[in-house]
Structures are given as C-alpha cells and as structure tokens.
Length: 387
Image (cartoon, rainbow, N blue to C red; front, side):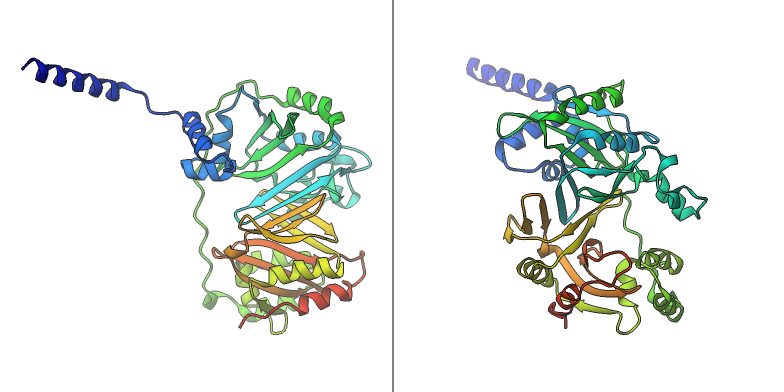
C-alpha cells in the first residue's frame, strides 16, 4: 500500500511539473533546430518553425541584432546612407532564386531627390512620380544595380555576428510586411565599419522590441479569364510598343498577369522553351562569353547584373553561377515554363515557377540606342523549345 501511494505521489508531482512548465520560446526552438540542423539557412528555419524570417531574426535583438527605423521614408534614407559603405555584397531573393553581387554602388553626382536626374525631377505622370519616390540617391547602373519599390519595405535590422574567419560580419537586412526578406547588404571592407556604426546609431529604433506585427501573406490574385480579355486590342498594343518598359503599363491596362500576357502575345512575339533551357542559357553564355543582363527580385526590389559569367554548376538543389563578384542561384527544379519574348525591339528570356511567379529574366547587354548584340539573339534562338 505504501509503495502504491509513493508511486501515485511521484506521478502527481510529474503531472504538476509538466502542467506548469512554460512552452519553449521561439528563440529556444530555433536554438534546438540549429543544433539538429546546423547548416539550415534562417529562411528555411523560419519556415520549419512556422514563423517569418524577420520574426526569427528579431529574437536576437540585443544580441547582435538592432532594429532600425523603417517607417515612411526611413528605409530609403538608410539605403541612401549605405552608399557610403564602400564595397558591399548585395543579396536579393525570391522563393526560387537568389542574386548576389559584390561591388560599390554608384551615386548621383549630387545627393538629394531635387538634384537627381532632370527627367526624374520634372512634373511626370503618376508612374514616373512613383519611380522618383523610389530613388535612393544612386544604385542606377554600376556594380550594384537596384530598382526599389519602398512601399513594400516594412522592417529593417542591423546585424552584427561572428564570421567564419572569426571577424565580425556586419549587414543591413530589410523585410516586407509579411516578414519576408526584401534585400540584404553585407559589408565587405573593413574601412566601412565606422560608416556602418554611424548609420546604425542614426537610424536605431528607440524601442528595441522583438514584437513584430507581421501580416499573413495575401493569396495570389486570380487571373482574369482569357475570355474576358480583349485579345485583339492587347496584341495591337503589344505591336505598337516602342520601348520595352511600356510592357508593364500594357499589362495593367488589360489586367493581365505576366505569364498570361506571354500566353496571349501576338504570333511570332514569344516562343516557349523548356525549363531546362535555363542551364543551356547560362552554360552557353559562359562558354561563348556572351554579356547578359540578369534581373531577379521580389515585390520590394529587383537587382540587376550586367556582364559576362564564367563558372556554372549544379549544387545544393540549385543551378548556379559562381563567379568571384557575382553569384546566381536558381532552383531550376521549381521552374514550370520558360519564354523567349520579343517586344519593343528587345528580346528577353523569362522563367516562371509552378505558381506562375517570375523567377528570373535575362536580356543581352547593349549600348543605349543600339540593337542587342547578335550573339545574344543567337543564344536566345538556340534554346531548347517546349513541345
């Protein structure tokens, strides 16, 4: 009898302890996950833990992570200040692609919106005015070539952490309202450390709270049915394009998704290629030294690389360009379609994933006012066609 009472007492004590034990915090769960999978990237760790990357990063506020001001124009002003960092690595990604460029961002000759290019200062239509608001004092052309959409930027952090060589790694990391990474900048020169520290002190958020009001991602908008599209007028508008940049306005006018627009294009303007054409394009561009432009981004930012590439290979579930100052990583197993597109006198090659999202697009490097090089046109024409 006494033994039974002792057993019951021990069981009861254990139940009380289990009932009152606090659930593991997000930081603790992440620490456990890192122990189990030390090579897991933070983006994948966030997905495994059912949170956003920004929320996961915020668990280290006060431990190498500093939250920065990001409301209003603050994100733009941080990027403007970052022009003084010197050599950096700029990293932009979407769900199935990553682009990484190392170099120095170019500045406008005079800083400040009012002194930026004349065509941006004049009274413009709403689309041009929106572009002006998304100018951050530079980044147009040059080694770090970026196109901003700051309305999608919500959270900003400065991150100081130990590097693989024992030296501290400094970065600026930006996220959208869903907590998804928009852009990251890693300092790649010691001389920029003082500039970085000053930037962090200037834009440090007074309240260093880890609590983020992250929003759930909105479901993808359904395409307008093809039967409701005035296809004839759309195709006429396509043929009337005099500049490739008019394409975005035409898609808005006819309420088309990008891939839908390609599907409904005039005869001879597009040609469907296989997803495997991505490897062919990169391999042959490297082999034949064809200068290409690579566009990869997300809702908040597009990063552009212009130049030749050298080393291509499959690794880590991606097809990669692995050059000293330029890396490209495309999860080509996630690609559903590829297209050679001719519009406004320009030929591009675009790839989309299984959700119909554009992953990456390519153009030939050309001088302003001149046609694209024949080497690029030949490369685009040589890609394996889809049946």
